[in-house]
Image (spheres, one colour):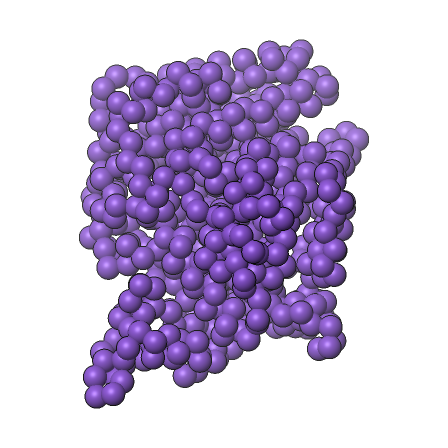
Length: 559
């Protein structure tokens, strides 16, 4: 789960599908002003019955809308299965279901197996918050093809995201966020600009989306998931959540423990942390991951230094130098310190990006910033809580082979939704004085990533919605086992979060599997051991042995 704009917003990008807003569900709950009961407005119970009785009108998926990230319409799966999209009506406010309603965008691919073997639907959330599940699932479907033998693969745009009542904070009066220094360390003007940017962004969100802002939090999204379960006809919710999706899954288990089916949480968010503690843990997580990269680089004769410590120090010095004096690049722009952090942090999400990062850092240290700039552009603006679209980045000798995640158009509301959901979920409202007081801790955790993560705590200052709590509630007594997959090298959701989620879920509920690897999450790393263990649980209900550990497969020789 992300916190810094420099290590930015939401989820696994892909060429994908989406739900056009023109598609409607069959027999939807009545719209505003149309619900009539016994001579008057429908009661809450009547409204809930109408919502639960919907039959989605599944149609072929169009191309993703700009607000979902754009791209092409999803192609049929290799066996000819077409992607289907629909809309579902849900209460805008689950506390007042007879009030205003909203659309939720859905996508699915039907099971490839025999009907007698079908378990039900497997609902995915790939992280963020803010990523479009409708646009993401088709691009990642090959990773989950084995699971389709017994499940329909299903995802959705959570409320406030994409085609589910998108939050919009854009405003012509706002400066481009690239013009605002994420780490104000050069006088009062930089800090004033950052404070003003966050304040003005909050005001723009309220102007443009004030009617939906109070209702985009994780608790209401978890209630949407239970509605999806009921409308799809499943007795239990079978679920696969990644990164922020693990927080959403924990919230669902807390609300509906008796309705949890087979659930997997991968890249687990620590539910014991408030926002400041989470940012501090991330600083340490990114630092640890970068030190692992540096050790790997040193073993291969990295030009940045003879050992990991020197490589880390050289990178910190390079970031500071670029922050003071940006390096001109061939497209007429400049490579600054923020771009370096974008590139480094983005490349730490997948180990197969490490060779490209090595080339880029070595070139920048030799006054050639093109490769690092291209890497920053490719990775810095993609979803923080998941990987960019997988590519052969590890084979890249130069910038032309850097990971391509340019599918996301300027119309995507991913960053706006990230801010809105994060600020709705958290009641923490930090000031510049709060950050200054904690800044030494962040610098000790990571001189490279710490400052940006510390100052990101200001992003909810002035937010028009109060927020719900300091930390999520995930206790789920009575729920069946939930498989938690923790990655020891995970930069964004540090490994320790899995054990704490297991403890908070409750005795007999949280069940841990350790992956001794690199990158964010584990299943999508392609590790055979992890996939075998997760598939065995989802397909056959078999948990791994207590204390089970999967080891990473090394990068191929020469990488």
